[in-house]
Image (cartoon, rainbow, N blue to C red; front, side, top):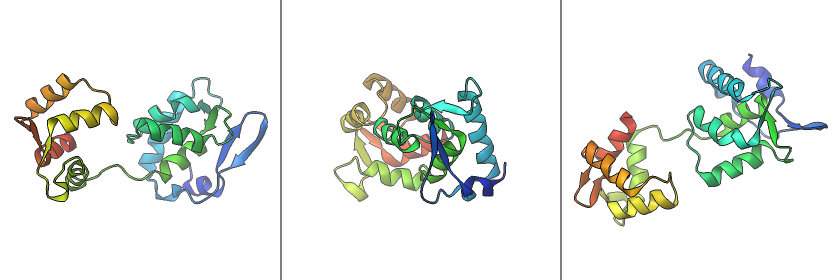
Length: 177
C-alpha cells in the first residue's frame, strides 16, 4: 500500500449513495509502514464478509486494537466522524484517516503522572491520589472495574499506601504493563 494514495482521497461508504469525501488533512503520511500494516490487519479481521466495509459498531474495538484507548463518549463521536451520513458502515481508507488523525496516547511516565495529578486536590504538586477518589473516577469515567479488584491490583503492585495511591509508582507500573 502506498501512503501517498491514502492522502489523495478519503472516502466513506454511503450504502447506495455516492461515497462522501472526508474533508481536511489526515496525516496518513505520518503513519509508519508498521502502523499501516497493523491497521490493515485489524480491518481485515473485522471485515467479516470481505466486502471492504465494517460496521460502525466496531470502531471502538478497532481503535483499541491499534493502540488507542477511547472512552465511551469518544467512541460515539468517532462513530459519527467515521460515518457522518449514518450508513452503519465504513471502509478501510476512512479507518486509516481516523487513526491518523487521533492524537497519540500517553507516551511517557511523566505524561501519565501529570494526568493522574489532575485527580488529586493538590494538583501539579500531588504525589498521591486518594483511593476513594480514584475508585470513583474509574467507576464513573473509566473502565467499570470493581473496587475490590482495583484495591487488590494496587496492593499487588505496591502502589497503595493506606488509603492513598503513590502517583509516580502507579504511573511506572502502568507504563511497564
